[in-house]
Length: 307
Image (cartoon, rainbow, N blue to C red):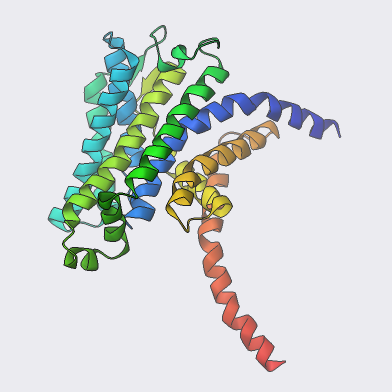
C-alpha cells in the first residue's frame, strides 16, 4: 500500500514537467506522422532534424538573437533537411528509409559544425516561455501554456492546409502517386514539400526543447524516433486515423499519454536504462497487434466451421 501511495505521489509531482515536455515533443511526433501517414513515406529524418533545430536555435540565441526569429530559422533548416531527404529518394531512387538514414548521419556532422562543439549552454537567454503573462518564467506552467498555444495554432493551420487544393494533392500523392500524377499533380513537389514540412516541425520541437532545457546537444535526438513512433501508435489507438483531424490530433494526444506512461514507470522505480527496452517492446506490440488479429481471424473461422 505504501509503495502504491509513494508511486502515485511521485507520479503526480512529475505531471506538470512531463506535460510540458510532451507538448514540446509532440512536434516531433507530428514530423513523424506527416510523411508516414499523409505521404506513405517512412522517414527517419526526424532524429536528425530535431537536434538540427536545437543546434541552430542554440547558436543563434547564444549570439544574441531573439527567441522567435531563432525558432523560425531553425524551422527553415529543418525544412531544408526534409526536402533533401525527399530529393535523395526521388532523384536517385534510394529507399525512403535509407535516404533518411543518410540524411540523419550527415546531419550529425552538420550539427557539430554549426555549434563547433558537442553542446552549448543558453542559460540566461530570453525564451518564448518567458513571454507568458501572469506566470513565472522557467516554471512548467508557462511552458505548458506556450507550447500548448503553439501546438493549437499548428493544428488549426495544418487542418486548414490539408483541406485546401494543395493539401489534398499531398494526401493524394500519399494514397496513390500514379493516379495523382495522372490527374496532373506534381508528385515531386508534393513529396518534397510534405517531407520538408515534417522536418520543419521536428526542428521546431528541437528549438523549443533547447529553450526549455537551456542547452543544445548534438546527441539530443538519440532515440527520439522510437519514442515518437510509440507516441504516434498510442495516439492513433486513442483517437483513430480515419480522418485528417484525427490524424493531426493523434501526435499531440499520443505524446501526452506516452510521456505520462514513462513518468509513471519512473515513479514506480523502473531504472531509466530499461525505458528504451520497454519502449521498443511496446512499439513492437502495437505494430504486431493488427497482424496477430488478422492471422487469428481465419484460424478462428476454421475452428468455428469444424465445430
